[in-house]
Length: 142
Figure 1 (spheres, helix red, strand yellow):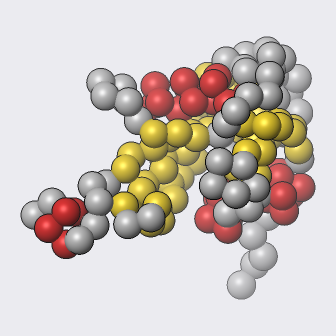
Figure 2 (cartoon, one colour):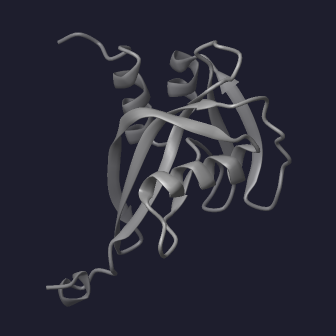
């Protein structure tokens, strides 16, 4: 059965990156946008036809941060409803290949490079903050 048979829109697949700066520090890129209301987020976007999720992640990071980056590992995934459509976002760890040539545009208004703990605090979406905390060992111990 397709999602539409249950009253849901089709599944949306997206990908993005937890991108560390090219200078060797552990600062990661977070973007500011106002498309669905003001939010700080990890760079990510929808998969285009014919793209692998890895290609989507690299493209979206370049589009949203202005920097090319290479994948260094798998970071995890988040899932949520986007309106009535289920959405899965797969994230990779990435390293910037050089400085970002960021230019604010209609979609992304700002870019910040923050230490992981500060990035997790700034991120609007709990699932993205949780992913960063888990990746960097910042989750509280049970």
